[in-house]
Amino acid sequence: NYTAEKSWAYSTYNLNQKYKNLTGKTVVLKSYNTSNFNTTLYFYGDGKLLKKIKMTPSSAKHSFNVNVAGVKKLKVYVKDNTAVSGGTSFGLTDCKLYKAAPPKQPTVNDISIKSGTITGITSKNVTVYIKIGTTTYSGKSNAQGKYTIKTEKIKDKTTLKIWAANKYKMKSSTNTVFVKVVKK
View 1 (cartoon, rainbow, N blue to C red):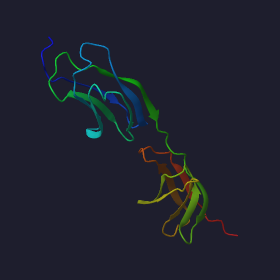
View 2 (cartoon, rainbow, N blue to C red):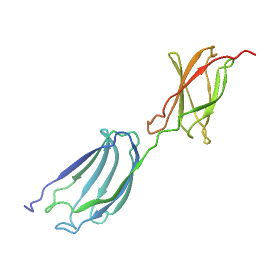
View 3 (cartoon, one colour):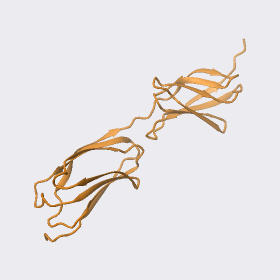
View 4 (cartoon, rainbow, N blue to C red):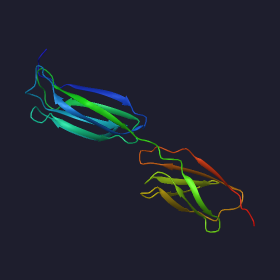
């Protein structure tokens, strides 16, 4: 109807914590109103504001990169800041989601039952968890993927459950290790 009004629109996407980044561009579209708008584009992850971009005709062209790590539901929301006639003329293009991969299942290189030290390898810079009975221990792997975790003394015939998780909240499969002391 070409009367001045504040408009809004949104769309939601189920990401299910499978992605780490969303990239794309905002562009001006050829339509009725290309010279008179003041709009903000919002990206929300599970209700939390991740990024906002203010757009006017002179600043509507943007490249964006939104961290969506750990997000289950993404909401893309656009809202006019001022009432304009003829709507807002911009769009999103070249949008790409980049997948996050779970860490590698941790392997065990050595278990020192006397000192309670467990060493092994997994993906680099992830958190490694070791569950012994009802107690869970954790530590970080280094830039080469090596980890060392100190626990209490490990008893004979103990089962260890070992897994890793990355910053995107993705978990590896669990490695179950049965400790059996061999006496020589």
